[in-house]
Image (tube, rainbow, N blue to C red; front, top):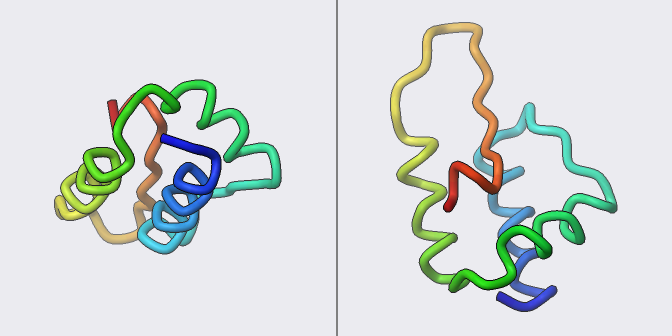
Length: 68
């Protein structure tokens, strides 16, 4: 996964998890962790991670380890 793809993945995660805090350093950190993985596979994992029901009032967060 290249830097542009990591940035897109971070934006997608933020769109799926509005409460998740991402800053300008997040894509760089995620690139170190996820750089060796395929973008399409990583992106496909996000909807699977966020589609499970949550208790009311709970927020969802996705970490690189969840994607792996």
